[in-house]
Length: 340
Ligand code: GLC
Image 1 (cartoon, protein in one colour):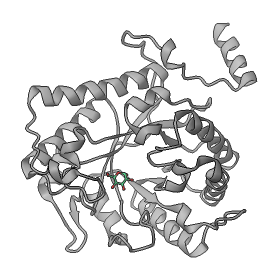
Image 2: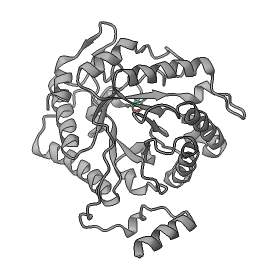
Image 3: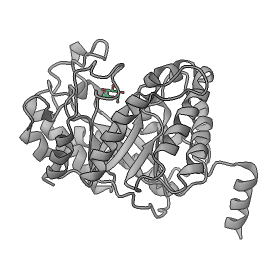
Image 4: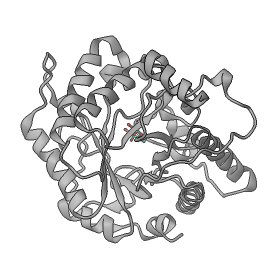
């Protein structure tokens, strides 16, 4: 009876079903069944369709890479796309057809190779800076994408927005994500939709996520801890040059720092019965080789133990595990990810 009342209340008042943080129990939460998502091990195809203009960041993902990814033991790819750079800036915010055909081909290559494909709206920085000025465009773009891909198999997943931050705070994002899910559901009633929290989709941000009532949502978080290790010398992170040389040896303390965070995410997932995805994690290629391998292997293994699917960042950017010029894998990194 109580459940029926709650459901009715939710339907009548558009109440969010994830309780506010101050009403959440502090003890380990009671487990709720967490639905299986079909995702397990993936790679991000970053720095390609998310560059400001096509080719600007020097990455071109060739059709045969999808086959190599599948053969190497991965089941998923996440395709970050800067849709906002390929849409009109005035209503009806029409997406550029030539660009969409490139996206279509990428999606198709993934699906034809038996991979789950996560289509991810990446780098909408203008939305983060001035949400009110860009929500209409964001929703209009999702309306177009949802219709275009509505006939695709269930192995195509939509990810609403990469790493909300800045002015797109938790409250603003919760409101917007609910609207976007509503728009997508008019043409894709059952497709999995992936949603990360504000604050760059950190694990802590899960606590502030408010989802609409919907059985097919996945909560994403990104994992780069310790950030000074994973992002040492990253060209896009100010002052990261001073972190170069930081190692990760896998001491008990270093491991516990990681497992505590993953436990927090896992606890949230079980409490709410919402599946998770570690949509990005990785360590920059310039880090000490042994540290990088040990960290990557540990994080992937620990996520896997908790049933959290992961997507390594990325194929051939600064965190590469594949050489896009020679077509060769970094074998020790590949083993770190796939041998367990
Ligand atoms: C986020 C950023 C991307 C960056 C990655 C690793 O996905 O959007 O540009 O390369 O994190 O820092």
